[in-house]
Length: 418
View 1 (tube, rainbow, N blue to C red):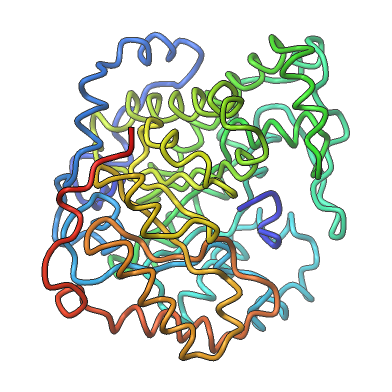
View 2: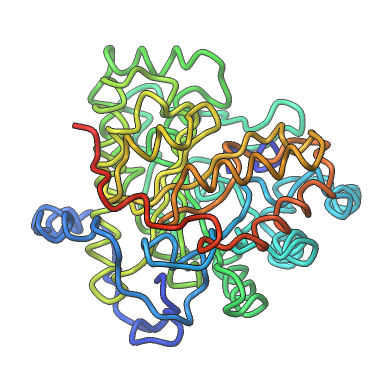
């Protein structure tokens, strides 16, 4: 879900409601900006207040994302499918190309369902990559199995912007078909999750030409060519918004936005170069989808987000993911009770004795409170993680009951920190 997953709703059942796959969603082109500008601020404010309407038939994860009362926290894991599973490694030997594994419907479905069959998590996330949609709007890329993603023609100047074009969703039909099949396979037993990269995070790859440890080129562009970067980010916002809507129409019941590298810039820079475009993402999805499907939960995850939590509230998302460097109780106090939280067990606990893992799960769940929490790791599953530990993680959370953990609601009086 970072670039290369291997380092990798209508939140009620929209297929069974008035929001059908054939409902009119607009042709999301550049004219959609006018719709966004006219969105009523009061509507966005209201959508942040718990709980939101739901159906008892909705998957547990969707209900928790809306802040509804549930019996226990739902659970899934970032990088849920991948190299820690023996069945995945065996499949990868037969299909060594990551692009093949993540762009072929049969392989996408098989890999996505591997952890579902083994552990029955509450969320089944499509096996894909945040860079998958790039060729559909004019940015071809390759993946080196060692170096990761490589973009041969990074965008460095105004002239380079001419290579961009509106997203062609016909080139992403393998994503849509895979989501439809996944939705059919898991039914209402789990939520089907889609995901995208944030405009800033996608831009880091496009400007840097691949992965980087310094982000020096794009950080410099903020000052040397801000008009180029703003144009790129605006284009990415439109394309990613359409991609989110496409995933929802194809069956995704919840969407996670990975602003994976948002934590690599100072908070004031994040306010300028990432947050506004995430807000526009949310508003554009609202304008095009939520009029007919008003309950699609959006989750925002930033790696290294401890300094950004209060700033993340204003993006309009429904759930904020915490990495493991943030204490869950502290994070919950800082965020208040008007947004759900996700996380945040340290992935290294899956290498510890199982009783230690059990204790940590209990600590995180109790710290998060009994409403609006999705249990997850604070980052993705690490390579070589024992599968029995992953199984134990899900067994423990399925055995939890809020009624036995809490005698009274602990979140009612919490408010966001000013």
